[in-house]
Every structure is written in C-alpha cells, then in structure tokens.
Length: 67
Image (cartoon, rainbow, N blue to C red; front, side, top):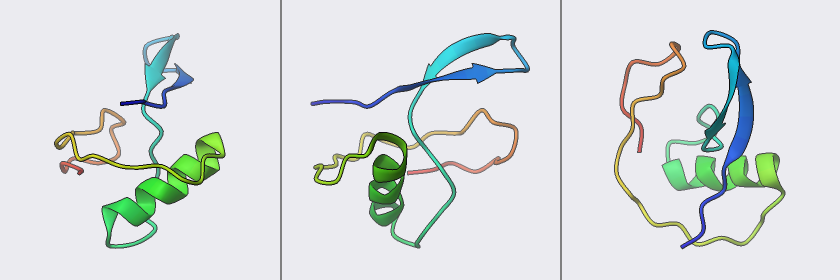
C-alpha cells in the first residue's frame, strides 16, 4: 500500500508537519472527493483506495468525523 503525504507548515504549533492530502467535499461520495484531492495535491490520476477508518481533522474547522 502507498500513502501520499504532504509537508505543511502549521502556524499554531510553529513547525512543519506531515499530513494526508485533504480538502473540502466535492461530492457526497467520499471517493470522488479523495480522487479529486489526490489529483489536485499530487497530480495522480489512477489510484486504488482502501478505507482505513475514520478521522477527526485537527484543523479547528471541522468537529465531525470523516471517512
């Protein structure tokens, strides 16, 4: 299995951190959003997805769990 990570500067903690590419919903289907974000962030077009579980984003913008 391959995982694409991006390094982003997080101002609240004052350091660079590795994270998973994510964005805001493009569709009700989470796989549509995942494919769109993967293309936008990394330029990848053909990828297989495997649901690993849910997560609670630590961005302070969302309080719900995401697939």
